Length: 155
Figure 1 (tube, rainbow, N blue to C red):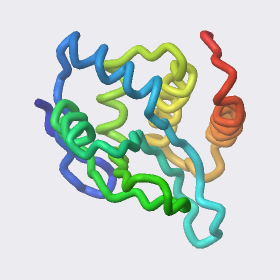
Figure 2: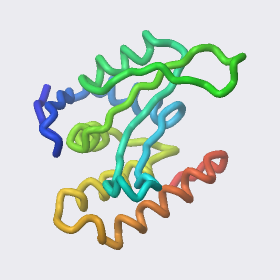
Figure 3: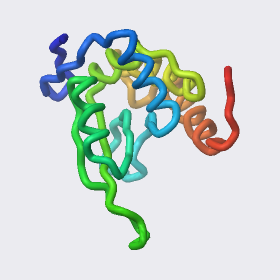
Figure 4: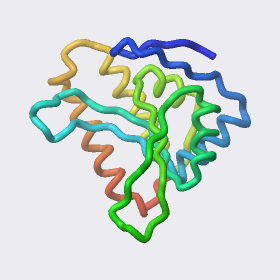
């Protein structure tokens, strides 16, 4: 297990995954996972946000994901529809942790998002990220890829 620190000085523990764990997590992220990159619309918050998330009604399943990765948080996920079962959301937000996790995986359906997220993290480690043109391009590419969720792309 490797100890890393993110920009906020939070300690992040990310495990070096076995081949079995890499395949298992890749399948989960490709099917039920969400890779997020963007900026809040609020003018108050200007920082770029990055996260890896999985939502599910099975809390034990999400706890196993957190155990295998070695970091992240799980919170109740409140649905707008009352007839839905209670759900939970696993979330990893630390940039260093996301970079370590995604660099160990190869996805199929969301491989473009994985590569874009890793590129964005590298740019965010540099200076003057608020005005970096490539971050805005990555944000737009993410938006387009997520709009077409039902269209599977293998590129």
